[in-house]
Figure 1 (cartoon, rainbow over the protein chains, first blue to last red):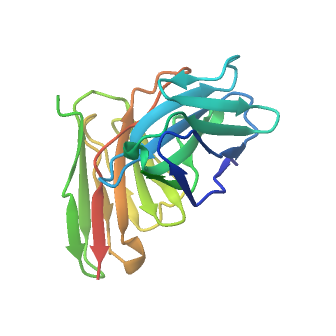
Figure 2 (figure 1 turned 90 degrees about the vertical axis):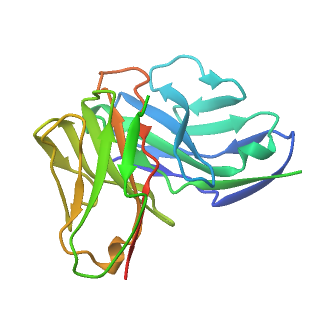
Length: 115
Length: 115
């Protein structure tokens, strides 16, 4: 069975600082994908970044990057130069090759950016 | 460009009543999904559909029924609502293309309160 663990229920960061949100996963699939979503207070789910298990390089999307350590089964999200608008819930999710298109989500981390 | 819509956005019902949550997407995506979001659990998959007339159970299917007679619609029915089904329900869709960065696109959610 696939499992995602996010061990940080909440994080508080000063504006303009970098922040790392932790995500560890467990799967027996040799091929899988890892996703991060942002959920602001308005409630919608916003896709941020994707990392494939066979990707050689860490994924980057603007201020978002993914610190992918396959041997440790971790896929931490790094947000550089944090902004007030980054305050939100962040979810890590995984899709395995055997799971069709299904996503398994972690419990989420609530990030608060302080001015 | 309507994307993926859900209705109603808010619903209050009573224990034992039947409730149907609607989901409509305009992208002709093959895959559609229903998730529920509860504090401490992140998003959990209820049911999903790979195509019209093809549905399958997710992690928490008990008490729910789905159908998919048309590609664009994927209604979720609570046959006899219980208080434990109070939650935020998200519908999502994806193209189902194998491999690569195939994210799911989420609707705005439906907040359901069962009294």
